[in-house]
Image (cartoon, rainbow, N blue to C red):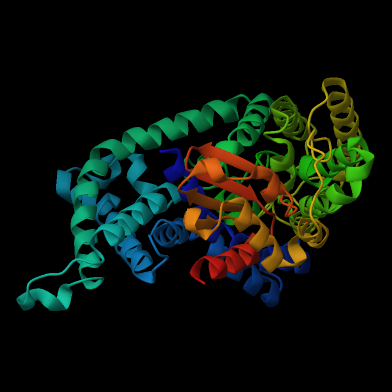
Length: 486
C-alpha cells in the first residue's frame, strides 16, 4: 500500500511542475497592473489569464498526470483514458444530470456535485485510466473484434469502469466531500493554531509521501479553501488577510531556516569530511532558498536524526502560526522559495510580503542555534558525522567530488552499490529521489551508494530502496536506465 501511495505522490509531481509557469505569468501580470489586475493594461490581463488557464484547470491536469504516472510504462493511452473518465464523471454527476436522474429540483442537489472539478476527482479519474491501461492494454480479442484489441480496448473498458465508479460516487461523494470540508473548516476555525497544525502535519507526512493529499485540501479546491487559486485570482472569492495563510509560513523555513540548518550541519561535521558534505549541504541550501525544494536537505537528516526532523516539523508549525497572526500573506505556485516570493508581491491577496525578511532572519538564527546545539548535545549522525571512516576508493572519491555534475559516474556507483543491474527489478524517480525495487536486499551496500554523494538512502520495505539524489535526479535516472538496458 505504501508503495502505491508513494508512486501516486510521484505522479502528482508532473501536474504540480506546471505551477511555476503559472506563477511567472501571473506574477509578471500583477506587477504590470497591481491595481486593476489586468483590467487597466491588456498585456497584464493577457498574462494573468494565461496563468489562470493552468491554475483553474488543475483537476484535469491531475487526472492526466496520475494517468501517466501510475501507468506501467508512462504510455499516453493511460492519460487519454483518464481524460475519458474525467469527462464522464463531470457529465454524469453534474447538478443538472443528478437532478434528472433522481427527479429532484436542481437547487436541492447536494452541494458536493457542484464541486467536481477538483484535484480529488482528477486523481480518481487518473487511477481509473491507468488501472484499465495496466490491465487491458495487451488484451487480444477474437478476429471479428481485433480492431479493438490492445490499447484500443482500454478506452472502452475505462468507460464501463467509470460508470460503475459514478454510481458509487453518487452516494459516497457527498460524504467524502462533507468530511473534507469539515476537516478544513475545523482547521480554518482554529485560526493561527490551525495553520500551525497544518504546517506540522505537512512536514511529518513527507517521509511517507502522503503530504500531497493533505496539501490538496488546503491549497486546491477540494474542500473550498483553494488557498493557491484564491491568492492569485481575485475573482475566486479570496479574503484579504486570510487567503494565503496556508502558504506564507513556509517561506521563513524554506528560504532561511533550512539553509541555516545546512550551515549548522556543516559546522558540526568532522573536519576531514567537511569538503565531502559541503557540496551536498550548500547546493541543498541554494535550492531551498531560490526554489523552495527542500527534500535534499530534509532527507539528509530525516532518518539519521529523527528527533531533529521532529523539531523541524514543530518549527514549521510555529512559523505558520506566527505569520498568520502578524499578518503576512505570501503565495506560491510551486514552493516557498525566493522566486515565488518575489513574484507574489503584487498578487491580489499579498499582504506585507517584505516582513518575510526579518522573520526569516530570526528563523535562520533559531534553526542554526537549535540544530547545532541538538546535533552536538545528542551526537546526531548528520552528514559528515558518520562513524564509518573507512577508506574511500579513488573512483568513489571522484563521484563524491563531482556530485551531480558527472551523472554517468554517479549512476554507475549507485548501481554498483545496489548489487548490479541483475539486482534491480524496476527504476522510477520523482522530484529528488530514485525509487527502486530490488531482488536481494542482502547485497545492497549503503556505504557504496553514499559514496556517490547522494543526500540519503531510505529502505521503505524489504525489496524497495529510495536514493535521495537532489533536483537533478532525472539525469542520474537517465544514465542508470542506460546502464540497466546495456
